[in-house]
Length: 104
Image (cartoon, rainbow, N blue to C red; front, side, top):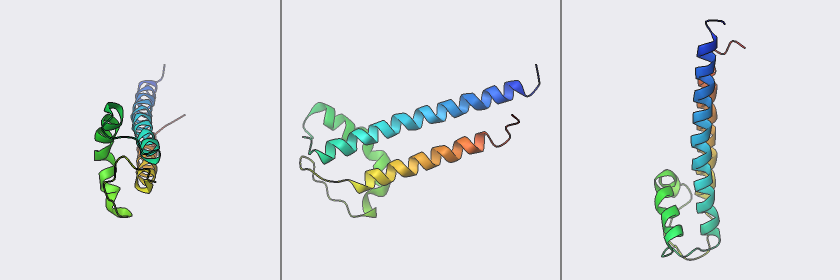
């Protein structure tokens, strides 16, 4: 057993953790995107939960294309798609950073 094996296993663990977290976030944002696209009623408990939970993650992108609160009507949230892309890129960057010293 090499001295490097525990470090490699630790790196793999961090990669799995990072990817799990970003996948959960991307699924949440995908739900938000579909609910907004279909004009989901914000008074519905599930839609309200998704909107409330995802707002902090998409808020930095609201002013990118202009944002008006219009829950309950069908709208294409481009900023949600941009947020998904940005978070995925950040996660992949973190994975590459964690695996930078990989010796396999």
